[in-house]
Length: 340
Image 1: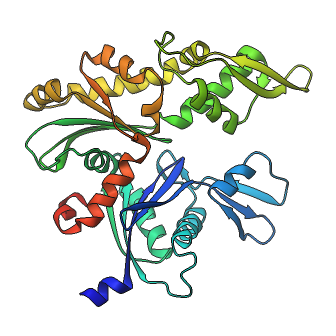
Image 2: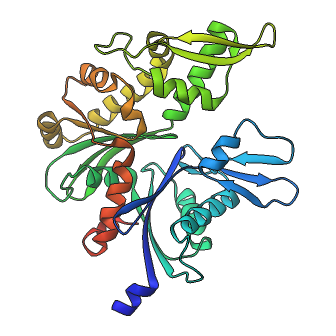
Image 3: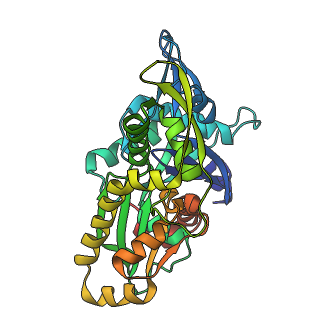
């Protein structure tokens, strides 16, 4: 068995719409944006991850950047396979020619179809995996923030990623009821792009919108510790000349309001279909927020006001899912019942 383990490399992957994280030997070894740059003429991969991200929106005719995942699922099969393979190579850099066989645990959205599940499995196998296990994101997030999922106790997890928001009530090692909606970080970015265009007559790209979301993004128009105004550069739609404006967090809170309301509706719907005994547990334990969206200022207070329940933001919410996936990989014997 020892020799078998020597030839098997175990990795846990959080294959996200915005970022892909990989855990190997209990450490996050890869944390890169989910994006690939191709040469149009030869169709060869030029860059993966952060390098490709720097090219996005700045490419000429010979280069195209592709985001292989859309709404939490694989939209471009070929690009996804290249991306997974490239990111696995990042782990093995400097280790010479030796490539062990791979055992992977990959997390997937809970609202995924069988066809979409198959696409994830196939991409991983083509990228070199001998064994592939799939685990649902809310379950991985719950394990990642230290919840004992085997207990007969109801816990509600909300994972707001780049492409999907996963809301699940977990008890006895299973998802009792869930809601998966395709409103998340990417929608926030496109809301910001449209708002800046409509309100200020300035055209900005997705990368700038993401920067605005990180710097002054908010879910409430009034915060106790407000961030300062943020300088935004873009193209003036009237003159076509580059221009700079200042954007406040209050403006962004107003422009994100509709998307956040959709997430709130899904949370209320999930609570509505929760069995009464588990509702009693959730009243005690509250709601846990994970994923990049959990970092949006004031979101926890807004959800708490809407549901009248305590809301906890996980520690390091961006890595909660991959930490849980890593734990499931390490204790694969105990967690096999969670896997697909």
